[in-house]
Image 1 (cartoon, rainbow, N blue to C red):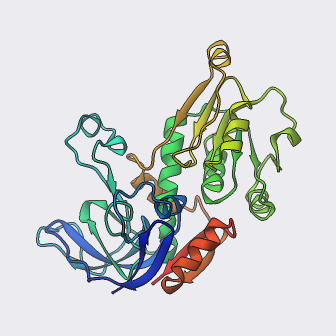
Image 2: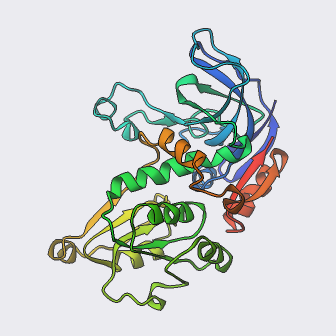
Length: 329
């Protein structure tokens, strides 16, 4: 079968790989669409994936075409979205219900072959059936949405909060949509990318600008979310948190990224700095929110490219062009 392959640091190709074989509790999914993500760029840079080569793609959905011998919960022909999380269920973090921090953390499309291919293997337990009205190709958005839902679990936002989001790419826009639905009094978005910022305004924001200084809130924001992973954005965001406010590091930064904090201000103003790592007990809820229409796929998905153009799709994504880019086998 055809698949995208990150062969080595900086090199992505499309080639032939063996057809997947399901284990007893696995299914084979014929992939309908696979989304690109910042994590894929990190893998290309030699981060996250423990070994290369690897078939990337952790945001995907498709149709079940083969079942393992012990699978009873799914049938051939079921349309599913796939949670890529692979937890060991044995370490102290898994036993404490924090599988996203698993000591042997793994994920489809990161540590094992993923959905940037014609077919992919997944545990049946990781598959969520799609309702009839949800288009399979759109359901690749469920995985990033589940990460955003996890972010809001961490935030435990209060009603009436003023929220500032750095970045209006896919994840920033998802955080915007969730902020609007979790009782925010106002949501402002900062981005240097004018096209993406225009999409944020289309979805409805209280304010939008290329920099926070252009927004009229000198007292700061109750919640500041970085959805960029960019050091300059993170540094600026840390300075914009109001007293008793929270800064959420949601964007994935490079390993070497460093910023400075002001310990006295954190103490004196009771500022919380926290992070949100991937998916945790949030995939099914994201699937339900998606089915209920929390996102408009036609707004979020800007490009649908053939799998054969995966390297070019990565380049397009890295250049900040468009919003969510998906490849279609």
